[in-house]
Image (cartoon, rainbow, N blue to C red; front, top):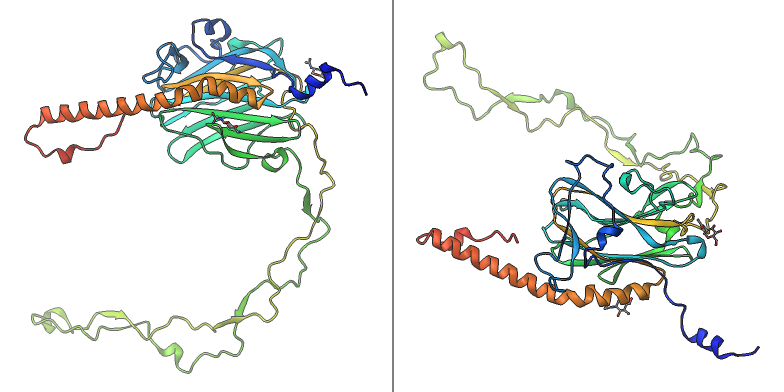
Length: 400
Ligand SMILES: *[C@@H]1O[C@H](CO)[C@@H](O)[C@H](O)[C@H]1NC(C)=O
Ligand SMILES: *[C@@H]1O[C@H](CO)[C@@H](O)[C@H](O)[C@H]1NC(C)=O
């Protein structure tokens, strides 16, 4: 084998990452790429996206994102990828973006969808019914309904499959980074803020495949199977006189009232009370059943329908061509930013270093400062209003 310099370099340098989409929303050109689906919902139901750097931003006033700006509205927006992603090329698929619930969210979706789209994709109609390949990202409603959705389309089943285990999400007011990678070896991984929060195989964590084993249809619980753990003791007998014990007796502590008049009120009788000696109807005591066999277990056999699917990862089998948001938000104010679709996790991490990681610490400082300032203002306002009152009573209210 002849070792050329080119071959040698190719061995050293990994193939250049492919970027299918990248969006930072920093200037007004985003409007040329993204379309609001005007025909999805009526104008009064559809919320407006604003273009803003937000209230506290580690990247300064020129670092902008898009923000949901009206409460209790649907939000739609889609854009074509700069290059279609075709799963048949057997590449990793990485989806990454940031979500900032600046409003302190109570209820609202913040997930992103990767769409098969195609040549006939009608951006004006994009909405909840539009087929998608991947739905990924946080969704919050109340304190008990918080998750990072990972929903993948199965071509074989023609169904959208939810991840079976819960993947947590962040619900504070700071920016968080969400990353999903799907690999052609049918594994996946979810990262929040670059930390792996869930990983595994697609067949373990999603219902892509039929079960490996089924209950043997030729077997059923034998008629004489004994699964009663306890039985009445056949040797136990009812004690003599048991049934003669009355359920109630005259109250031994009651006394005839002083003003009782036998003539007017009739003969005095004490009220009846529960008899402490009474034990209810007699029942024999229970003993362990000597014939007990334990619960019957249905024998399992290999499922004849089971077949491994090599192409579970191929959510973009006929290419994915678009990306979009299709959301409902009760409390608006979520800012989306720094989206990347690529075939390289390293490329996505590099992009995160140039964006999310660069802004993160300053954002936290600005947030803490703004929170402190607001608390001080509120305290001053309270003191000005009620100079004589005890401050302690008016603490609380950490809204910011
Ligand atoms: C995706 O790639 C496969 C394999 O290269 C090819 O056969 C197929 O036509 C591609 N799909 C589209 C829509 O181009
Ligand atoms: C992100 O995670 C990778 C490991 O998956 C690590 O190599 C990299 O340094 C991390 N980036 C930052 C900025 O922490």
